[in-house]
Length: 232
Length: 232
DNA sequence: ACCTGAACACCGTTCAAGT
DNA sequence: ACCTGAACACCGTTCAAGT
Image 1: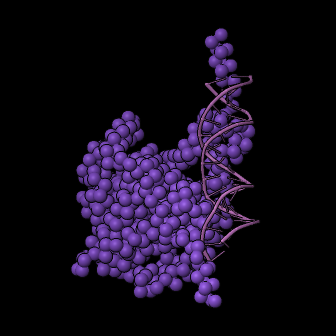
Image 2: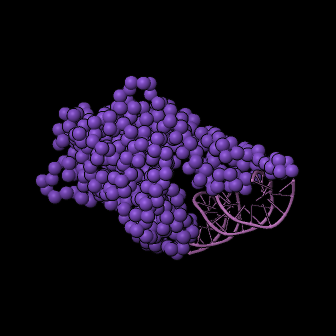
Image 3: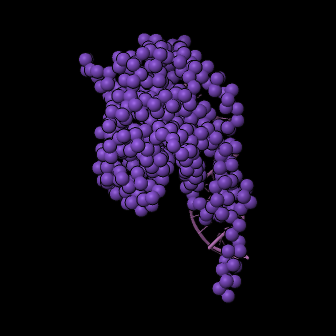
């Protein structure tokens, strides 16, 4: 009786939280954030809007959960082969997040939103843990660990937000050829800025055009790591 | 005739772009981003929704314009009294943005959105110009100016996004007493995390609780500035 | 040129009802 | 316990019509 009742109770559970998340990420990857509507999602899963609410709550909760899933996965990956240096470890974490955003452009916006709205939520804590776990090995004394970790984390977050790559919200198509066009248009715009007001931009416009995002990102990390040696 | 015609043409222009921006910022300050609806705005200005579209375009354009206005104002302010050091100048710019967000909580989200979506728009360019204009005086050689400026700018953006302060989207009320409650709840949550998985968080939870956002922000800038000396 | 405001085409969320 | 889907209460945008 009891067994039968249990079986009956669960008879209809054909929908799981994981399934919904997976479908949501697929919609997001294909069409950006505006493609994820409750209607599109319930159609894709052949279910009703209420079923989605039942499993994952509101649309915003769903987006947060998808973001958390992907970022946590990125943080868990790249455990790095044995004898790597703390510097390599930190670069590895930073690039893992960088790459996750590259694969899922919509993530950039959502990651930033989540950090702004919940500055000490699981995503930030996960990042702090992975990065902060290395600062001791860098020679930073324990009473400066938090200073060191937060400088690194903040640099990483800022760099990622600006390198989130063109067309973050749009379709996800093109992207590569886009980049050149984007920088072309942008630098044309900068050159029209009054030189008197923007001497720096005029001085560096060439460098900006040539720079490689990933290389620049690593340069920035190297600068911060150098700065941390002063905390010893 | 011509004069009369001109006067007649402009007879009805009682609405200006500036007025709309001002009203929009007032709504945003009072009730956060969800309080800025086209309907609420047109009611406040005693006009129709079409009039707003005519002057400022879409809601998203309006939000971007409001963000740009406030950030540009922050960047123009604090020109700093005469013989200040480049370090002071950089700190001044960073804190000006920091303070603008403190006064307009909704700005944090919008600033980040704008940077993600338009990484080389006027806001970012303005920030780069103000910060980058100082790196020469720091002794950084010209071929590393862009590296130096972007490291600083990225650190500033990341730190601001995480210190955007609790309840970014909500009403804007409370805020001060909120903070303690927030960190209380957050650190309680961290202490429940498995120590084996989160050794770093457990080690620094006390520091996080005690830390002052502004001080921490300046410490991070000092670290980056130290790192930049290696570029000389 | 500037403004009006009704009409339109969407949203996300809720909830009584079913299994 | 899990799911359905119609109903609801909003949205932002458009556009013919007015001045």
